[in-house]
Image (cartoon, rainbow, N blue to C red; front, top):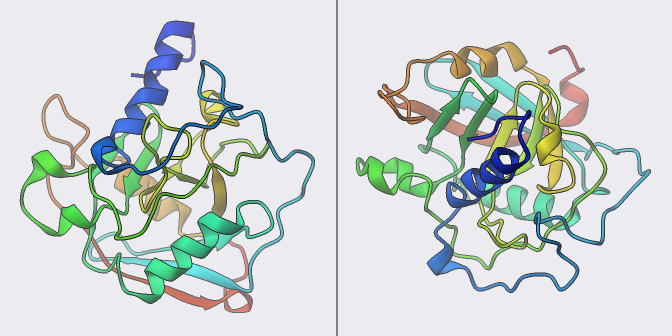
Length: 224
């Protein structure tokens, strides 16, 4: 997996996040002509300050409290639109965090297959909708950043998301940033410390997401 100190292993972590995003066999997108060997798109939105949406995503877990995320439609409009659409359809209700990687500082969720008991399939699920094209920006991955998980195809994001709980410069400009945790970051960090199965990043005990709802941004002053 990712080791920031070695180029080859930095490349490997990009593949790790990719295969946990969605099953590539279900992908109906094509690789951007502007992509390079590292999976970075040539079209990167730069120098744009994120402007929060009027609504936030409120993730309520069964055992770890609440995580509130502001969304950035001016940075990644298609990803925010997809996320909000799925939230309104209650797509994420009853799913689970399927990846906990304390060494990288990552928790990942959004897979509908986590509603079932076949843990071997966790991390491969999609929504019923087409994949979302990459919307890369120069916003760095740091504590609390919300990113879109994807396949090896840079345009392979669909429904899954991840939160980084420490800086991950190897992800910068390679995974779409579309939001940030503004409240409940400590709850996310507690999830990151939850035990995992031996030799795996899958949680030992299911980390259930009871619901994800959209609520007014004004109701949640940033506190973390």
